[in-house]
Length: 120
Length: 110
Image (cartoon, rainbow over all chains, first blue to last red; front, top):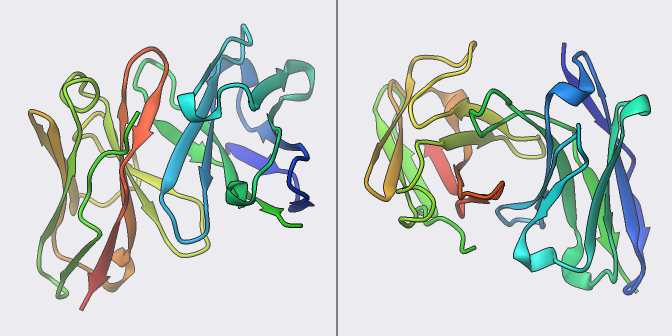
């Protein structure tokens, strides 16, 4: 079965960077693109980014331009999300989510989430 | 990209039906038949309940249905059960490999 296993919780200071990993199993990694979604405490889901796993091409939400980088290592079946210049308001649970593929445009499997806490 | 508009809360008694709306624009909900709905229980990852406006992934009860008219999509939960109490989020493809979520609706089963 499809599994997306994310790295553990992180505590960072304002201005630092954080890198979250998402290891995929149970399917051919390059057959499905990946999304990153975050959820601040008590708040809504917020779409952040999409990465084409095959080519590495990316699309970021305007809100994160210049601070967000998503990459992938196909040999390790792992996707990465790096957010820099962290602010207190970046405290959130960050999820990776697999794109359904076949041009159906939805997120069909999700990681367990990674809590990133930004605190001075 | 602004969030899609959902009512903050909805409620119904067991066995009743409830409908949650999701209003976007002609650039997202109105432009594409790629609206999906996600159920999220507290402390858990979201789970897809509806995709492409009205299709159900395997394993999702047929009590869940979706529709769309113009810039507004809707999720209907029929025959409400206690386990349906959760947050629900709509999502739409917005073109050029970008997506947008709604503000979320807390569904309470009375």
